[in-house]
Length: 172
Image (cartoon, rainbow, N blue to C red; front, side, top):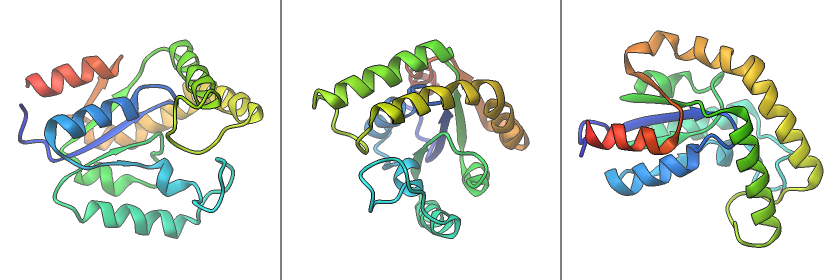
């Protein structure tokens, strides 16, 4: 087991496997995980429709970064630079956009059936927006993400799947 890793930041598009990987690593390494969606989206709304102010996001992120260990997962890159600096490892998950779309749709259906109880509620219009955003991420945002992590290329690793990332991290 890799005991040197205490601070891990996981990036990737919607449906990339960020939450899945952060849960597995959290359990294996006994490190608390944090989902950036819980910082970005207002707790007052039951949907993903109201973001909190940027100062509030920074305050919440800074509280997490004060800990000796953490696993942070999220698609966000433009306001989390401090976590990139402090991370021992940055993981960028890059499965195909079509696999990510399938997972987003599957998660939506499972939520509607009451079989997936994590996160906020989603409406059909939210699903459509997320699928559109997922393709926008693939065409535009991934390039911006890569620019943000470029200064940390010595501690950034790219994986096509969360399972591949988990196996490599735990074995090394």
